[in-house]
Structure formats: structure tokens, C-alpha cells
Amino acid sequence: MLEQPPVFGAELRRLRIAAGLTLAQLASSVHYSKGQLSKIETGQKRPSPELARLCDAALDARGALAALAPARPQRTCAGAVPHIDEVPQGPTRVPRSPSRRQVIAVGAAAVLAVGPTDDVMAAGTRPPGSPAFGNTAPGEPLLSTYRALLDQYRRLGQMSPPSAVLPVMTEQTHALRALAVRTGSRPGHELFALAARFAEYTGWLFQEAGDESAALGWTAHAVDLAEASGDHDLASYALVRRALIAYYGGEAEDTVALAEGARSDRLPPRIRGLAAQREAQGHALAGDHDACMRGLDRARTLLSKDAGPSPAAPVLGTTHLIDPVTMITGWSLVDLGRPRAASEILDRECARLPTDAWRTRARYGVRRALAHGLAGEIDHACTLTERLLPLTVNVSSATVARDLRRLSRTLSRHPRNRSYLAIAPHLAAALAPVP
Image (tube, rainbow, N blue to C red):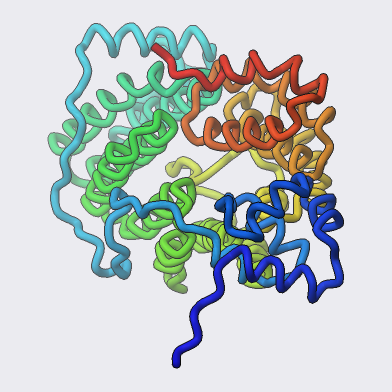
């Protein structure tokens, strides 16, 4: 007779007894009530993925409990997981362009909100000592201006809701593509490459806005534009972007499989390093501590070899983390059910974030508060949350909101705590749907 697979509650009880822990001792370790754990062990209550990971770490179960937790329904928007050479390169649907009036309004807001830089000049002007336009390569003034605009829009995206930047980003991408088609030759290829970066960032903004279908469509469009420029590496980076969507959907296996598609030795170290980071996050979501740490070690080695982008190429990935691998280590330790170790790293790394990187500060700050909350430091978690709520409202990020909901659930397990009672209405307001 075939042995029946263990259910979560029974396996949790077996592992707890084998570790020599009482129910009260395990409850104290994971900061859940004894009554809640008792109901889970007896099958009266379903465990959350959060609790499964915490118990997994407390009992050194090496992912066994996390694997037994009831899985959430699988989403289909991430699509199948082809090998990099099999990724479709055909045309993809692109969202309809906004009106010209929207573009002008948002474009003006971008310049006013962020302010001028040395790279963006009024028409007909140039800094002292710079070569006249007639002495530069054909199309270079146009390219340099568009690169500076992309930098400005990325800065604005750090301080604004995605809806404030998306109209102008979609229109600028279409405009660049049209210019590239008309220009031809080398300048045309460079315009296609720059349009690809505009499209890639647009896809990321759609993800931040909570529209995963549009995010995937624009990422595929970025790959098409990059292929037209002769850049075949962006298709691999697109897998890293798709892996991030799978990660936020709670799909550990898809996250790992997509990231593994960007392992090829022919790829630049930065893309491979970012893929290794994403793969590590997928392993953390699955509760595999050892595989996660190996992935992070590989990411650190690869990113240390990155010589940085050429002046003609905007940076792929984040530009606001001084030590991205260490920050992602702290992030992943939360998923691995090791919140105390995570909070020590996140405390240190969040203190190094630029003050004007609001979206980045909100993203990692909420994860930091979550780590402290899961570690049982409710008063401190509430203090951090109170400081972060204005930022989370300003940037209006769908991905940050997911961690904010996790944080809200964690804090709500302490309904009599005064710090929680003080921030609960503000937390609820921050999570309320925007009309």
C-alpha cells in the first residue's frame, strides 16, 4: 500500500516533537499564538505561506514545511518558460498611445518636478568647451538628449505614481521607434537600442501600476526593439524581468526557471548577476536556504566583474543600491523565515539609500518593517511603518503594496498593542483602493 503524503499540521507536530519543543515554545519562536498553532497542527486552520516559512526555519526543516503549505492558485500571465533561444521575437501588442495633450502635460511636469541637469539644455545652447554640434557624430545631440530624458523620467518615477510617467514614456517610445525607422544606418540602430530601454522601463512602470499583462507586453516590445538594433542580450534581461513578475506572484519554481534562462556565459556579467539575484529570491520563496545563498554568492561574483555601462547605454536594473547583493540577502532572509537576521541587514542597508529615491526607500523600508514585525518587535515595526506610509502613498506601487499587506497582517496579530492601534487606521487608509 502506498504511504499517504504527510499533511502540514501532522508534519509540523512531528518535527516540533522531534526538536524537543513544546507548542508554547514554538509559538514564542515564530511569534504566533499557541492557539493558532494548535489549530494548524490539528488541521482546523490552514497555514499561511508566511507561517510555513517561519516554522521551516525554526525547525530547520530545509523547505519541507514550506513545500507542504497549501499553494495559491497558479497565474497564467507569466506564460510558459521557454529557453532563451526559443523566446518569440515576433510583433507584440503595445498599449494605445495617450493624447498629445497628456504627453505635453506630463512631460512638462517631469522637467519641473525633477529640475534641469547638465545633460538637458535649452535648444541652441551648449556648455562652455563642448564641441559644436557640427563636430559631433550624426544624431549624437538627439541621442544624448533622449538619454538624459530617460534619466529624468527614471528620477521622476522614483517620486511619483506610475500614472504620472506612463503617458509620456509610451509616447516617447513610439517617437523613438519612428525616428529609428526613418534614420537608418548606425544612428538608427542606436535609436532602436534607446527605444528598447524606454520600452523596458515602461514595462516596469506597468508592473508598478499593477498591470502585469501590459508589463509583459512592453517587455516583449523592448526585446523586439533591441533585436532591431542588433542587441540580442536584452532578450535575456527580459527573462529576469519576467522572473520578477513571477516572484511577486508567489511562483517560486517559475521565478527560478525564468532566471536560469539568463545564465549563458555569452551574456554580460551584469545581466547574469541580476539573474542570479532573482534566482536566489526564487529559492528563498521555496524555502531553500542553501540554494538561495549559493545564488547570492554567484551574483556577488558576477556583479563585481561588471565594468559599468558605456555612456551610450542606460543602466539595467536598480541604480540606488550601494550593495545590491547584501540588500537582497536581507530581503531573501525574510522569505526564508529568518526575520531577525534579515532586520539586521536591512537596518544597515536602508540607512544608505539616497533620500530622493522615494520608491526604493518605500520598497526596502516596508520589507525592513516586515522583518521587525515578524521578529516580534511590534513597537519598532509600527514606528518604521508610520514613517513610511507617506512615501508608500506618494509612489503608489503595486509591488510595495503587497509587502505592506503582509506587514498589515503581521501587525494585526497583536490587536491590543498600543503602537499598532495608533497606526492601524493610517495603515488601512494607505491600503485602500485609489478611486
